[in-house]
Image (cartoon, rainbow over all chains, first blue to last red; front, side, top):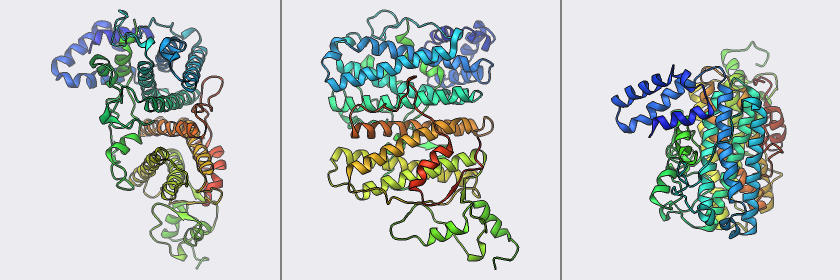
Length: 288
Length: 238
């Protein structure tokens, strides 16, 4: 994890990020103190807690969350704008092309909607590198425009990540009921998209690890249902870690109401949130 | 006996919201009526309250949890029946999906039951009576159209209830939990829509790219067709 990169990404959507940590030096010092004390595995959690303190109840929080959402929508919209009409897309069935076009339209509407809500406070669209190469245009998804299977794998990951990102921010929008409801109304649309893309991937039956079949419209355990290349798989897996939870608010879901509620079913029944920091780590390679 | 002053037991039953008429219905259920979940532990005829405003969902966050519990009871009962008596033409894939969704909805129902029992044992609503007399479980079209109605209704219900949850105490946690469930309902809704007509997974979305939200009153007016028990949502937050 590159903490400085994360902070830089956040600065793009929230210019006041350093004030939340007192200063840039304060943020770096706080992080250095933390990472000195913690095992590497515990660092993401500690970072998440730093962010949740910094972003907890700050005035202007709602706009920060909306700009975070807008950044993700810019990413999704530009991704679909790029793939619709691409060589990979043109190999797909008419129904599949129609579905991707529909999702493209929805994501562009989300961008327009959030820009309208934010007005002058809206952040500008970043420059994207959809190969996940951080601007090198030579990352693990190089060649995605030519492969329908890779396009669907990326689409699934973006949609499932979007669901988790909005979910994680809902409690931060409670101070504005109208905005909260609008965000929830986008959140469920991302879930509808994810459901359909997953059906498309199941029908295509490409790049799904055999041990993770059948791929379902819902998320089973922490399965991405995707295998492409080691580098791509590692990047994608970050979007699914934590989805395997089977205990909700102290209630063990396994076996609830019947033996049919296995760990797999219990994990599917609840989608899990991601923090802003986790999402920014995931999308970092796509933002130049 | 009914003219005697209320006893402590009567008050407790009353705060449970289970009223005389519904109590009678509950235990006098005909064969066509499916009762679901836990039944009320005891019911002496002396313990009945006099008014008949229906099962009271209650107020505050507990009211919202009861509201969600009521909807999950409805969905779980529906899919339990679908899986128990699948329509004749059901494919292996569709049966897999219906079974998965049944599992999820039962998990949701039982989760709310456990959470409410822990958080507000005197306020949890009882098992509701459902009325599925308008559904033909032998017909794919009838079952899938009903499933679509329930899933879309569930999505709009959770989307609309988010803003009614308190901002303090356990409120943000409850909102987070509702968020964990609503996206699964939306995944179901999209799948069911696609089974009816492939590509209609997001046909509910408006010109801004947004799904709908409904108030509890709007949701219960629609759900009422399928719920025999009268529900009183008048104390919910607004």
